[in-house]
Amino acid sequence: MNSSLIKVAFNKAKSENRPALITYIVAGDNNKKNSFNILKSISKYVDICEIGFPHNTPIGDGGEIQTSSYRSIKNGFRIKDVFEIVKKFKKIKNSKPVILMGYYNMIFQFGEKKFLDFCKSSGVDGLIVVDLPWPENKKFANKCKKKSIYFIQLLSPTTTKQRLKKIIKDSHPMNYFISMLSTTGGKLKVSAKEILSNYNKIKKINPRKNVVIGFGITEKTIKSLKKADGLVVGSAICKEITNSIKKRQNPVTNVTNVVKRLKNKIV
Image (cartoon, rainbow, N blue to C red; front, side, top):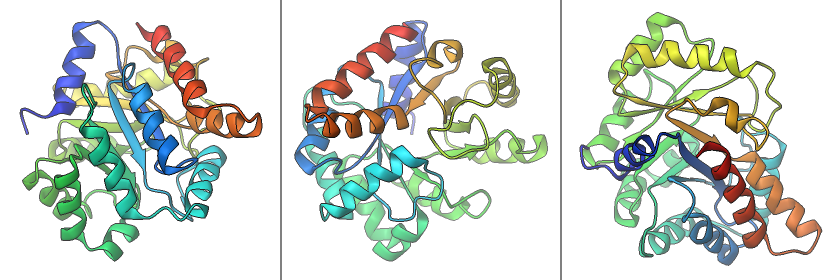
């Protein structure tokens, strides 16, 4: 997995003395065409694109992402449509690495082998499976590795040091630190100082592995966390799509403007 595009993206951000900017959108929101056009438009400013499978019971997601999911499902969006968007996106010049985020139940129903084959053929670079924790995910993570797909482990502020060491030892070169115990999009209930303190404890275990911070990151909070390897912004983007629809404005333009502002705060 040495030549991974994800690794290249982190190295580029480091060479520019900034964190990698990772954006999250729900595939198919607010329709298939706009979903692709948003990806294409923001790709100029982001380092890695995280794309969520729309799910009718997204346990880890807050209101904004749930709203995005419901819109996508209402439009009849299917798993195969997600891979179609990724495949199309990967064909454009200067497209960015893609991480898919979903739930294991959906992968299991689709069929593990079939799912990973679709990931490989469409150009997926990484996977986050919210409800498949370590060590239960070891087998599946190995299957991902064989396909040269990063399996990204989730770490939380309550993960014990002993457990952290074991997860990081088994992990691929990127991990996702959940900044606080909340659903996505919640207001930061802990200070940036505390988040970075927890983050640094994780980094010390293996400094060679990239750790990104997610949950509660907005235009207001992003600058205070710029010492991280990468920062994930999702709810703020989903919220912008919702606002654009309400105001009958173009979500592609509005989301791109949000992403531009986020990038400007960390360069």
